[in-house]
Amino acid sequence: MLAAALFSGCGSDDAETGDTEPRAASSAELRKQLRGATSSRASDFPAVRGRTLQQVADGVGATGPQFAAAGSVYTPGRNRVAFGVIDPKTGFVYGPTALYVARSPDSPATGPYPAPADLLVTDPPFRSKQAATEDDPFAAIYSAQVPMPKAGAVSVLAVTKVGEDLVASPGALTVVSARDDPVVRVGERAPRTPTDTADETADISEIDTRVPPDDMHDADFADVVGRKPVALLFATPQLCQSRVCGPVVDIALQLRERYGNRIEFIHQEVYVDNQVDGGLREPLKRFGVPTEPWLFVVGADGRVTARLEGSFGFNAVEQALRSAL
Image (cartoon, rainbow, N blue to C red):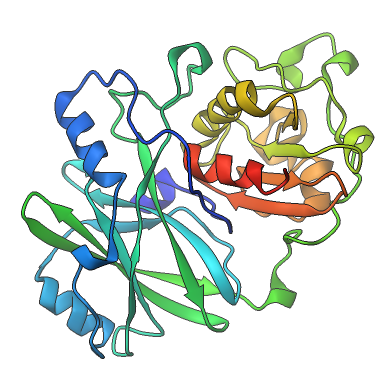
């Protein structure tokens, strides 16, 4: 229940560059933790050496934090697995982290897959009232690139270095076959669906729940797709079923300063009439998304080059944007 309250979503593509330092952090301890968490090397974690996932966990010893998946859609092949490590008493746990995977706790494990933390805190000019801040422990999200051989249940184990100790956080994911994935995939042609634009309403709050509203509503996706690269972000900062919609919209705004002359940035609200019980707006239905937020990056040829679900920070978004250039 704790995980569900904090997260909802995931995706497929990760990051290689972007900001790797927290900005003007007001907490020296948080700043120190985040510096360590943004770097992760497989050599810093126990080798599998033919052991089962349970044996890897037993070798680590300390358990307690909870694995909180930030995703729901995984298919056979290479997946971005985004997650948080949460202590029920102290909240988010930050430190160098890696992920181990197996079909079940008693099956041979693979890994460790480095899972550096990706920052969610933007510079102040791009920060909404719904944003993550330096004072908020929800300031970063872990992600690892993990091969998933086939559909079915998957057991995972996050191992985090806290001080001089390692702590283990077990969890579980479900991998669906490619034919059961309802979401438009990388390489497919994006649906030419209209999106809400500012010139269609006298009240911007009807199409943007961010406070203050952003200005990524000038272009209609149906008009620009296939003509230039597009970053289409489905997110609802005020009504998000997780805490991540505000931060991801802010990240898009900040990265638009760097990429806006080459990529059209479009923010599309999620729910009809901004009511959760109103159901999803038509563009989300056309893309087949079951959760929010999602980011789709579409190349100039109209084909999806990257998709991200759930919580994603600067590195993941910038890598996705570069895939279309």
